[in-house]
Amino acid sequence: MEFVSLYKRVIGLDVHQAQITACAIVEGDDGVTHVERCQFGAFKRDKRRIVLN
Image: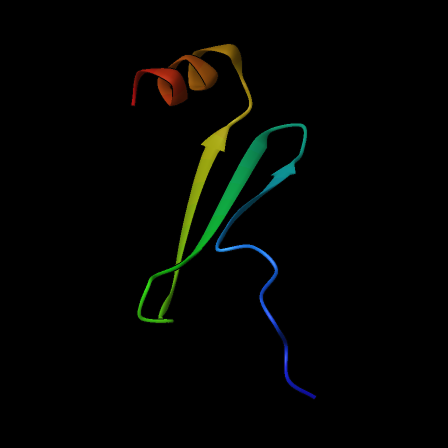
């Protein structure tokens, strides 16, 4: 079974009490898929760091 892409760019968030994980999947014009993952703390000081980056 072959998968067909519906969207070229998607992001998923996995939110827990102490940690947030973001995963972005981007398909380029050449068809190559790039995956980027970032993890952040869920405390207020950590959330401020997300906005500043």
